[in-house]
Image (cartoon, rainbow, N blue to C red; front, side):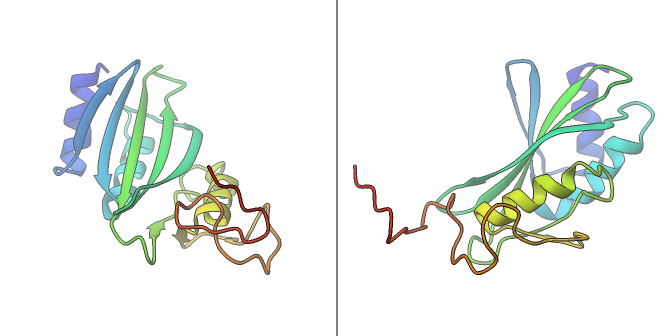
Length: 152
């Protein structure tokens, strides 16, 4: 499947998708509410068969947050990057994809721990690096560390 066909497939599930073609990956930005449906479609469709989630991370922007998913089809050889945009920075939530790709379980826990993004329906959403009583989310731009203050 070439990138144009992949675009059509994505648009059939998420019509409000924005596309960006950089490097070897097709980058798509979708509203977070569309993520689970699109992810399930891309995993299950015979034309796409995205069976490998090889990277999942968070991004913090002044007005919104994003969860980034790098997917590959080991059957077809094509790749895609999905950026799910979460408009609510104060209470960022998105559906888990750990029911679609098991590898997402630990990736999502890491994003939750460091960015504070809640993954709805995650089977074990708790901190993975920081202690349970840690206050705040260190990779957010609004995080302040009173102990290890670094000023530029």
